[in-house]
Image 1: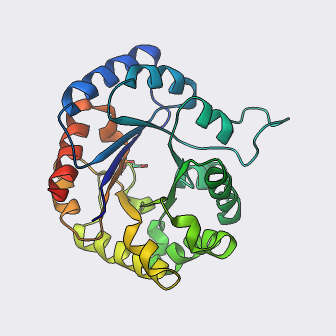
Image 2: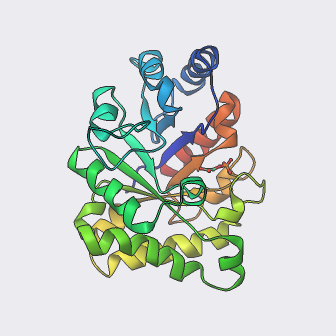
Image 3: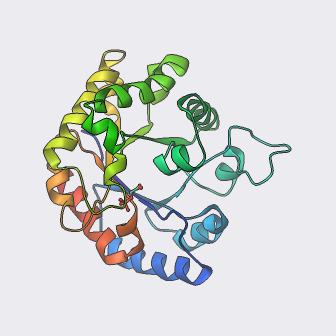
Length: 254
Ligand code: PGA
């Protein structure tokens, strides 16, 4: 059985004070949780501080992005070796905000996937269609294209131990989550798509849902057979809301 993963994507939010306070609260709220893996991805600048604040807890450290290069003249970037060095494990790549505001292509994101695998880190590959693509009935085509960029260059084996986050762009930060049935249909499509290359890996891979997941809709979403947890933005900045989401995912396993 797959172990659900709930991960908080803090995006461009935080301060030294907030990092300590939120992690202290999360440790309290989540101290007795088993049956669900938990990770948080603060901004790169606070990763080291977060790692220290998380010491001895079951909450893993994640990061929001990585560069395709390991070192050198690449001003402003953070490498996979650096992330590994400071103890980050789950690395978000291909988030729609990176695709949109930084013009990241499927091919470029596949390179990030490759460098993370090479360094033994866990890629959390975000995929998902825009509202326009959704209305044009292109959801499956878009998701397949985004996955194929990795499948066709690295093979299905690359997905062993990796995570996919299905995040319909129209649901991110809008308060308008996909319905459980809508999300389940796409998650099943994604799993079947990978199964065409490797049935075992398809059954093992964690497929998170992301897009306006909150304390009220988490249980219903996690009741779907192919939804293995969530990538949470806004609600991950509040310890109580995030804890309710984690508990809902842990209950799925039990
Ligand atoms: P949201 O963000 O939960 O605020 O919609 C999700 C994400 O972008 O990962």
